[in-house]
Length: 284
Ligand code: HMG
Ligand code: MG
Image (cartoon, rainbow, N blue to C red):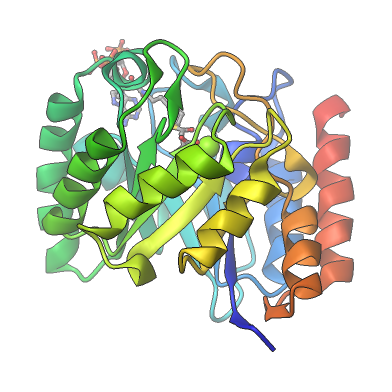
């Protein structure tokens, strides 16, 4: 046995946020409830961002109110600012995630702020969360390539990771937002980030746009990462990242890891059932 690898399920958030059809809250709740039985410890299922920017996530409070909470599962929500933080708390999120970019072009498009401004907005969130022991995860987007700025230097990613970790994020999730990373560019980026954040506090977040997500997971495993984000059914993308097609599919990552001898703690039959449900939600 090669050890344990955790998959963080982000389908109900990253998977669904980009879907065109207005998905009813009841369907989202049913998906989360099924995922809750599949063995995940963390499920990201809400996003308290502006509904003008991401209309699909408007019902996030209702989703958190409607789910059957399973013991040992933390239900997470994305928060871009203090308003989002307060809404996430009121809705009962068990942990929150702040999200920054390693490239200025994507930062502007995604949150209408420079990287520095977005990080400034996180400072009061992290301070408030520390007071109540609420875990905060930090995302970095465009860790190898940006749809607006092109290639992203590993040093830029390391600089943002260093800041988020120093501010108190317990884990930094490194996002290949448009799925253009290669094993080589991912390895270079990880080597730079590992210099500033312990590898045990890093997660890989790969999109499978170019079909390289699994190869990028393999290189990340070789460099010591043991946490990966994935979305059932391979749904998703980011509305502000043209070309960011699907997240890597949870069922594919889980099967791949098990083949390599890693233990994920997941019930693959339930994961596959959730994947079918997620895909069906696309068309209604
Ligand atoms: P803005 O327009 O610059 O800011 O947006 P604003 O302060 O002028 O706010 C605009 C409107 O939104 C106002 O309403 C605010 O009240 C409201 P109005 O006066 O026009 O009626 N507002 C809010 N409403 C609800 N919840 C809030 C909130 N804040 C303000 N928290 C802002 C700035 C950050 C709000 C906006 O740009 C935004 O919401 N962006 C979010 C974009 C997003 O969610 N992207 C997808 C998630 S990131 C991702 O998917 C990548 C990731 O998966 C990793 C990877 O793959 O790379 C994490
Ligand atoms: Mg993503």
